[in-house]
Amino acid sequence: MSIVLSNVNKIYQSGEVTVHALKNTSIEIADKQIVAILGPSGSGKSTLLNVIGGIDRHDEGEITVHDNKLTKMKDKELTEYRRHTLGFIFQQYNLMPTLTVEENVEVGRELSQNPLKMKDTLEKVGMWDKKDKFPYQLSGGEQQRVAIARALIKNPRVLLCDEPTGALDEETGKKILSLLKYVNEAYGTTVCIITHNNGIGEMAHKVVRMKSGEIIEHYYNEKPVDPE
Ligand code: ADP
Ligand code: ADP
Image 1: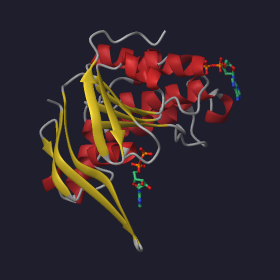
Image 2 (image 1 turned 180 degrees about the horizontal axis):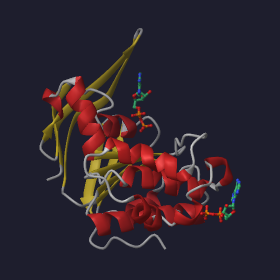
Image 3 (image 1 turned 120 degrees about the horizontal axis):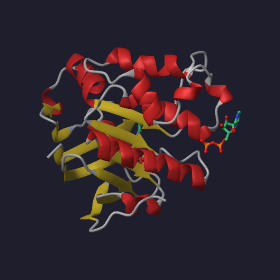
């Protein structure tokens, strides 16, 4: 198993308001899978991704990601874990506007102990010929390709994607999903994708459905379909 959560609880306290964002959550995700995390807004999807990603601390339970026991880690170890084991992809790309494509991806390369080659990585995502462009000169789909390259160049075991197609039109979104599927197949990267889009569930090996902080359903797809 690449990711194991057992009886994880996460509670947010803001003033008088208490939100039980993850309720006794247990899930196992096998190595080298694509997992779609579905559910309505506020159901706990981002919280789940954030505790797996070591961005948020969980309050109870155990989380293990590729032999990293997050529960026991100090903040510094958690930072190392994020840098070396994980890549993050966000809805809004989060590229540095003053850096070129290549310089943005270089940020990821410098964080890694075992990076892939710059040219290979940019070619894989189809952006080598635009390596000297700035983000504002690119379409949304192209910016997301650069963000994927920045994560991929670290050669991560796990890619955590929060609504990666949320800001893209349907056609461009499908191309990005194809690219994530390719990364999964070519590098054996485990890919966790949060989405509102039920269609993404069809391409995943495993589907996890959340509601009100609970996993209400999870199943394997017999035949994941291609996004295109
Ligand atoms: P989703 O990603 O499915 O939209 P979230 O994980 O973002 O759901 O949120 C789950 C619940 O936790 C929601 O009720 C949300 O308001 C609450 N929540 C998330 N983050 C915080 C936070 N930093 N402080 C307080 N409440 C939060
Ligand atoms: P993709 O499918 O990769 O998102 P598009 O079909 O949206 O690409 O865009 C085609 C071309 O138009 C791209 O090569 C890009 O350079 C250019 N382009 C699209 N949107 C913008 C934009 N908002 N600003 C500048 N160039 C753009």
